[in-house]
Length: 175
Image 1 (cartoon, helix red, strand yellow):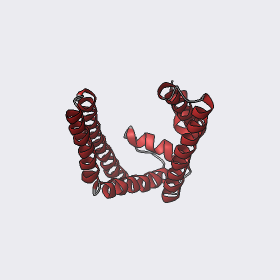
Image 2 (tube, rainbow, N blue to C red; image 1 turned 30 degrees about the vertical axis):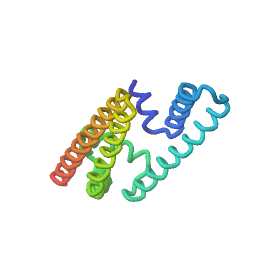
Image 3 (cartoon, rainbow, N blue to C red; image 1 turned 90 degrees about the horizontal axis):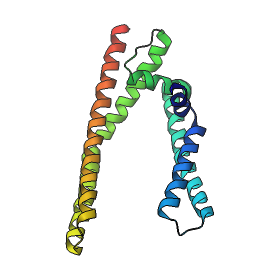
Image 4 (tube, one colour; image 1 turned 180 degrees about the horizontal axis):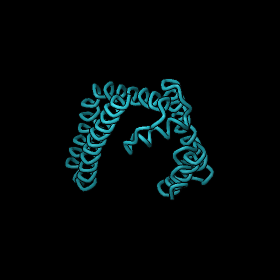
């Protein structure tokens, strides 16, 4: 299992394969009236866009930290598991990575209330439309789903900030 997780976290090709298969599956599930070639083309397009964005993000992060993208993936895993590296050079790279990710989270915190409010507005709008049209079952489920998703976002963000702040202090203690 460890090797499969390692392969998926390091290999863009593995992630592209999973995205392509998921896109193909969703196309077959929700757009069963369309031709299967259209499912494949759409899935390929969505996969290319997602992998392109991921590769850009990895390249940007590796430039900011001064490490290879594979090293950044390993360091992110070590940050999640709160493992401080023994090698001084790795600690310097990890310190840069932690600072950059905390900076991103701090910059994102300015827009978080607006995004959460926008998502709440969409949920309330769906609920109102459901009540007006007389079929509130789906809008209620959608509204609950949006609320749960927003709570999950806030919880994951809080957890990520705690882990990164712990790592920042642990790296300062080690020197």
